[in-house]
Picture 1 (spheres, one colour):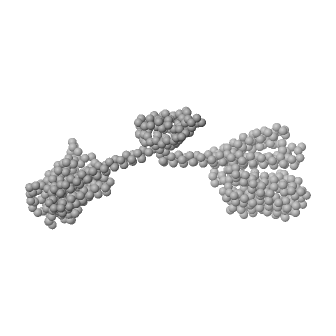
Picture 2 (cartoon, rainbow, N blue to C red):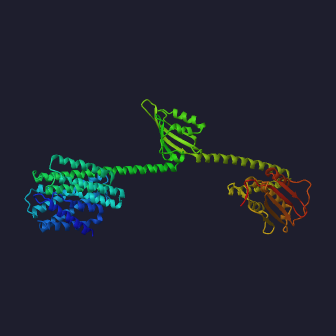
Length: 617
């Protein structure tokens, strides 16, 4: 299908060129078919190479045979035309690859260079064909020049239109641009018609040019290069038409035909090249603007993600502008120019003097500063900012502009404050643990007669404290479930039958966990030494519940009951464990403890307020 389409288009363009106007030596003065073949090859890429070659050769042979050419000259001309298209497209592909458009001045100049090279080389073969098979009497250089000029003009005029149309198929223009381009092309066509209807006066050459130039600028600045290339082709065809049929200034028969042809070719070349160059320059500008806008957008996104806003402060006028991030970070309108004094008014009063002192202190020897301060947003929220600024100075050393970045470090400051709180809390906890260990060690030493008993008792009590700390650490000190705490303290002595526990799984605070762990440890240790857990028949029951009243905060009630253990022998002097059970809960948790030793087994009832941090999970 491509071969047929190229063949038909090439044939029509060739017949039109041969029918309109030729040099006395038989060479067409304008050969847009060359641009058609080269343009299709450049736009479609290497995959279109052989279809284009076949279509161009077939069309050339048929067009020449229908004229005054013989078979051999037609074959030579077809080879030259096909080879010319391959050469031009090959040069472009070699330097720019298969993706090529006329959106830059470098590409326009490259197409011009490829057109010159292709037309010059194919002209050699074409000249040989004319000399050998067409019986031309014109000088060899004249024939070559005419071939070269007509083909080069055809490539420069027709190829850009096809190349840009191919580029537009991959990236279609918006409807607004298409409508605007079509309207402009219609106006260009009407203005080009002035060449035909205007009288043959010297001033008539100025009017169309004066009208065409702003139209071409309009197309180049508002639309893709394809529309400008189409306008240049329309003007070129109009020039060829008026020269051929004697219409307009270029059809004045009082001028020799050779002069009119040269003038027409010069006009085509000038308008085509000027149009392509202007369109390329505007296209490059649009590309640079788009790239700059994309770069600014990405930079702004990066600043926003990093909680950074850029600022520019004109010291002489006091005006200050900030990037879009100011809207989110500072609560300011980024598109509205403000004054630096407005920003300083929002700085925390305790930090204002420090910042003003740093600003006044900049000098050519010390142009930069970094400062951390608090800032009160318009919505009343206080944030922390870190500002890094650098000053520009005039010839007298006075600061005229400050530029820099403002970073929102509120989260970092909050993290630092939280870290300081954690360190202080850790320091407090360590001191408490050390103090508690010291008291436990002293009391344990007083209640044990031998060093072995002391070490064993002290180790058990420290292990009890360690179990409580482990449970708290596993829950990041947010609390410990009462179920877990009771299980851990009974674990060294419990079996499947000698313990039973029941109650809701209440979350305990760190303070409750540490105190209750020590009490449960003493109860479990005493039961293992003297009570129900010291025999195979005894057992321990631990039950608890959450108590709540309307007028009082919730409290926790725990009952420890030993059953079927050995008879309890009443002691005259209570030991350290008994004293700890009775005194620790009231002292540290504000609760009450009932501890009795009936002969059937120890009974202990503990009750204390839970506080706000405890809840049922």
